[in-house]
Image (cartoon, rainbow, N blue to C red; front, side, top):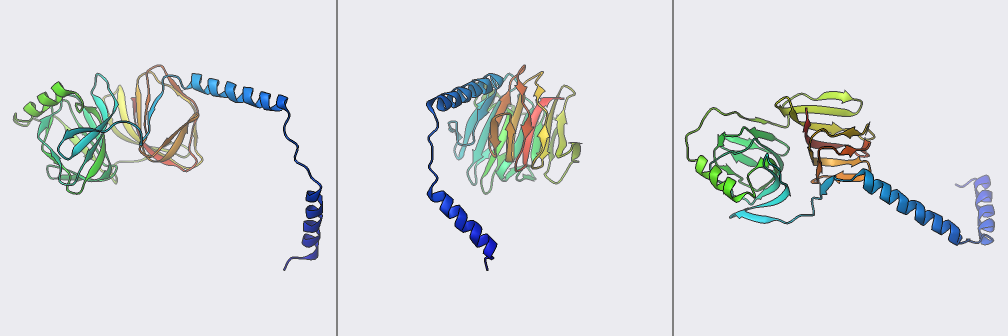
Length: 268
């Protein structure tokens, strides 16, 4: 039951509200607000200059072979970054890598020879290495970087190279339940995947409410958002979004409201 004091307060508020009138803001106030918003937008654009984001819903899908399509994300001298989608039963032929290629299964599963990779499993193949046929029994979506996909001549050379005998070039996988997570600051955990001493690929796990200081990029930095979301300054990255920070650019403070998991390839 509502006590008498609460009821009296409600009655007083009701009587007051009958005599309240809403006053529209003055034109000067509106003009000031508009100016502050425009200035804030211009400052944000300047601070994020050069940064590139490809949303999961953006980009153009292109056919690769029957049952497989890809979406270009970025082109570099070390190979392309793409999303690649397999229909159930689709496969790629034997091929020899022109570049060091990294891949992460985003959904579904892929079979590489006798190995099965599922969601968030990571695989890296050295330049010159050869894998067997890559196929998907039930369909899959994967992120590749260092790929020849989208480069016609390079893809042709890779398929021809796949006909040559295997060699001892390294190829390895890190499954989601493998590898150690290291807490690098409160609320931020890192799992090392690959490095040559200059460049490093890592998973980062961010807990809700975590704040990370902004930083400068001495070389190109690639990021694929695997789950959750983060803010890079004013830029919101959500699951499936790809982000590139070119050499010489900066990220402002990084935060996350809900937490997230992301792949980052950057300076070691």
